[in-house]
Length: 314
Image (cartoon, rainbow, N blue to C red):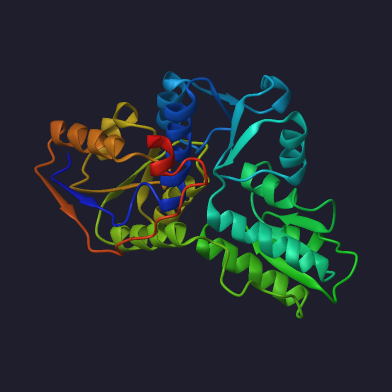
C-alpha cells in the first residue's frame, strides 16, 4: 500500500481555465441566472456541475437559447458560423475562448488571406478542433496520426501551413509534424508551437514524476484531452497510470505493492479534487506528501470588457 505521495508541479488549473470559469461566475453575479454556455465551459464534470447549480445552462445549439439571453462561448473556441449566429440572434456574448486558442484562430485567418491551406493536427470531434477548423469555409485538413498524413490531399502545396490543437501530447504532435514535413518539405511551421505552455509544463512534470514513482494518478475528467495526454505520457514511460474524476474512483487494487504514488491533475481539474485524492491515499496508508520542484506559472489573462472587477462592483 502507498507510503509516499509525490505531487507533480505544475498541475491543475491553467490561466485559460481560470479565466473561463471566472467569466461564467462573474456573468452570473452581474446578470443573474440563467447564463447560457455553449458547450461545457471546460472539460471537467465537477466544474460544470458547480456552475450548473449556480444557474449556468450548458447547451450545444444556439436555438436552445431564449432571445435576449447572455451567452458564453467555452474555453475551446467556436466556429465563425456560431459567432455569426449568436450575433444574428442578438445575444449578449462573452467569449471565454482561451487566448492561446484565439492566437491560433488569428494566425489561420491571416495566412488564409495570403493564400495558405492548412493541415491541422488534432482529435476529430474535439470542440477546439471544430472551432479552429470552423474559422474557414474550406482549405483546412485534419490529421489525427502519422497514417493520416499520407492520405491528406491539399489542393496545392506551394502555400501549406501546419496548426495544432493546443492540448495534444507534445511528443505525438512532433512526430506527426515531422511526417508532414517529410511529405511536404516546404510546409510552413508555426513560429512558436501551438501546444500551449500549460500542456507542455504539465507533460514535462509528469515525465519527471514518472521516473520516481510506482504508479501515477491523474485527476481529470474522461472528456479532458490534456488530462488523457498526461496519463498517456506516464504509460509510455512504462508506469501504470490511471485517470480519475475524483477520489471515489480510486481503486485499492491499483495501489497493491505500490510504495510511491505520483499525483497530478489536468488543466481543467480544481485543486479541491486533488486534495480529496490525497485524503483518500492517506486513509489507505500514505504517510507523507512531497511536492516536486517544477515551473512556477504566473500567466494571467485579462477578462473581457464588461466583466472586469470594477465593472461588476458598480
